[in-house]
Amino acid sequence: MKPKRHIVLPLVMLIYLAVMAIIGYRNHVRYYWLILAASLLIIAALYWSLRKKEQLRQRRQAELDATQYAPYPKDNPPATSDTNTKDKDALNKQ
Image (cartoon, rainbow, N blue to C red; front, side, top):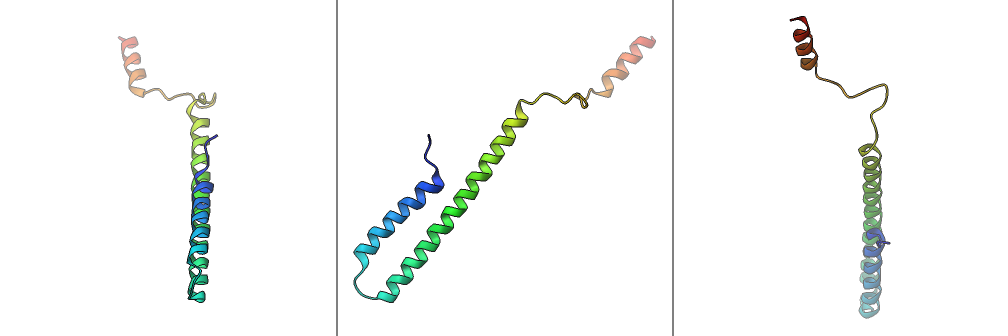
């Protein structure tokens, strides 16, 4: 099974953020929490956008698979060109 991008990429970014949060906790506590909150919001937005993109891709693929090999409906057979029937009628009259 292929790992899903909308899960893997934000997870890697969360791990990176956790490591940087542990290393970076020294001074400037307000700045520290502000950066953490902004980073979490960005990671959440990335997750939701990648998830939506993946759902759209799956929906398009399902529609393509459903229509690609479907037979012609009985009510609407493939259209024939009118020029062929006119030529045949003209030949039959002669």
